[in-house]
Image (cartoon, rainbow, N blue to C red; front, side):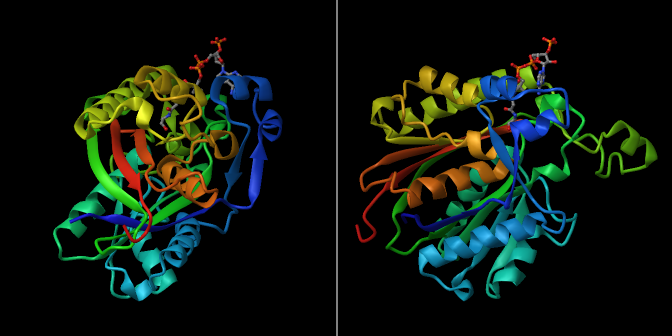
Amino acid sequence: MPIHILGTGSYAPEKVLTNHDLEKMVETNDEWITTRTGIRQRHIAADHEATSDLATHAARMALEASGLAADDLDLIFVATCTPDMAFPSTATLVQENIGAQNAIAMDLSAACTGFVYGLEVARNMLECGRYKTALVIGAEKMSSIVNWEDRGTCILFGDGAGAVVMSSEAGGQGGIGPCNLGSNGALGELLMVPAGGSRRPVDAQVLIERSNTICMAGQEVFKHAVTNMTQTAKHLLAEAGWDPSELNLVIPHQANKRILEAIRIRVGVPKNNVYVNVDKYGNTSAASIGIALDEAVRSGRLHPGDKVMLLAFGAGFTWGGMLLEWRTPES
Ligand code: UT7
């Protein structure tokens, strides 16, 4: 049973934090950030805005684009590593906000790979035939877990949300194809928020150490991101029987422009066929692919017949990719 994307949406908070703004906060400079990462600015949520608020904006846009009503939704998944709170889930908060009273809702935790994991879980549940429609959202308020005194990480992250509405009924534009996912818990320590969970709840010492914020071995993460996303891309191309030159658009997790270029070269994707918006948003973790996909759709970058690849890598480590084929809605 083919599963389709019916509509996409995205949201980034109003406040923009530029590299020049960061120069006033930590020992860094625009030139270093731009050259090493490609990032020029990131959006930062207001104090009163939580992840569910960002997710709700993206969800409403995706719903409107899909032509469905909130009541039509059977499943709502929110991929996030920055939920509003431990429970209730961010997904149930979104369910209430949009009035999707017939849906079941839950969060998924796979860090920056969460959106692709969410698409695959939703696709499989739709294929089973028991559910017909799903809303999958990647949403993050990364600014809430960033150590704003650590120049090695605080320059990287931003806030935002991206969403898709999927359906098992005909009419969608984005046909969902093969998916390949992976995890390796042995490398978890290279990218983590060490405290703030049940292993080490927040106490005075945690606040002094700031161990309830992101700790990352940047160079190690960089290498694993390139290796795993390259392998995933090659695996998917082999499975689909596609040549890399046929890929009209690769939409990777937006962590670092240099990572994206390294993957592009290793996989053999034509120049300009990798979507890059890390300059505008920084690394928005689970939100990045959803935001980029929505931008690509709304800017007319995708056309019927286009072959698209989503690629992600994140803490865990987790990684994954998915192929989409763009169609005219009725075909
Ligand atoms: O979402 C998935 C997970 N995240 C990622 O995929 C991120 C992967 N890693 C990266 O993107 C890169 O490793 C970073 C952008 C984080 C760092 O770039 P790098 O080229 O690996 O730099 P580095 O960590 O090797 O640091 C090089 C130098 C160091 O100085 P010394 O020791 O050579 O004197 C750092 O202290 O740059 C210094 N540095 C900075 N300088 C100015 C580190 N951060 C900054 C900064 N501004 N913000």
